[in-house]
Every structure is written in structure tokens, then in C-alpha cells.
Image (cartoon, rainbow, N blue to C red; front, side):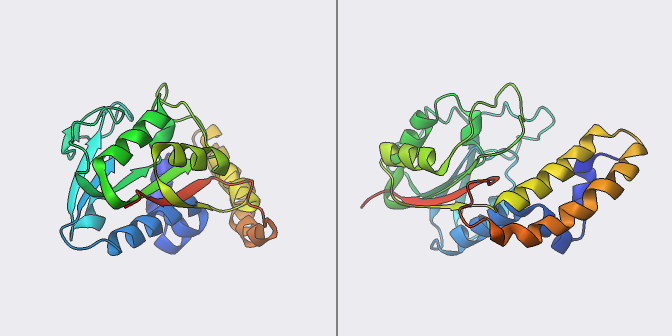
Length: 229
């Protein structure tokens, strides 16, 4: 059984405890959608399999992706297949936009953010999530990792303002996640023995996360910004 399949079988409270980045993203998307008015036109730029579409049932959701990431992914739920650096929409079309762990997969992140700013109406909001410490994934389409300073610079350059950049966990949550990642290196039944060694500290380490006040060690950042009116 793969680690991915194990994650899906975990009870929800335990899954949220050990997969904090994903839990933080879920909470951020839920809060973002609840703050938007009914019938708002929302662009999910880098929608993938459309896993966030259900959060926007009150709004009008448009999922866009280039469709070259996971080879086993199902892209049939997309509303549009397009390059995020050259979106096929008129300026000031959308009331809000989300871009969730996608900016690391584009060759020109500054151009993508500029495009998002172009198609969002004045006063429109952006929810952006980027990784800082993450393994290579969806290769070869994996190009960047971001610090809080770098993402603030890119947002300001694109024309977004008032950015709130929040880290997802600190050093001890990062260390916990890396221990769990280690399970993938143990094939077959040996993963059971590895789990006995790695899982207990991985479950305990997040309790110490409050010791990391600066959060310079983090899995990634959740960012809220707005296009000036």
C-alpha cells in the first residue's frame, strides 16, 4: 500500500494533524469562498482536477489549467485548458481568483501573476498558496520554491496590494512531515517496520511547533492580496 493511499484512509482529525499544509489550504479556501458574495465569478488558475470547485457552489466557478501536471490526473472537469501566462479572458473579468500550489509549476511566475491581476476586477481578491520546503513533484514541470519576501515582491510587481502572507507551520511541523515522507523509501512489508520508527515522533513533533516563533522553517505560505480599486 502506497503512502498516498494510506493518507486517504486516515481519520479526518488525524489527517489534518499530520498533513497541516493541506489542512491550512482547505481552511483558507473555505474562508475565501465564504467571504465572496453569491454569483461572484471566480477563477481557479491551476485548477488541476478541480478539487476546490465544491467550495464555490454559491459562486460561478471557472477552472483553468494547462493539463500537463500529474500524468494520472483527470482534467475533464476543467472549464478551459490554457497557459496561465496568457489567459484567454478579457481584462477585469473575474471577481476573485485562487492559485493553489501552482506557481512553482510555471516557467514565468511574474507573468502569471500579472495575468491574474489583469483578469481580476478592481477590488478583486486573490488567494495564493506557494511551497517553500517541498520535494520535487510533477517533474519536469517543477521550477521554483518561494520565501515570504520573494512572494511579496512578485505580488507587488504584479499590481496586487495589502498582501497578508502566512506560513503554514514551523520547524517541527516541517520535520514531522519529512519523517512521514521517509516511508516512501521502504518497499513492501518493510514499511510497517519503518512506520514503527518514524510515525511516533512525527505525531509528537507538531506539539513543539510553538517554539519556532519566526517560522523561517515552513512548508509553504498562504497569501491573501487584493487588486486596488
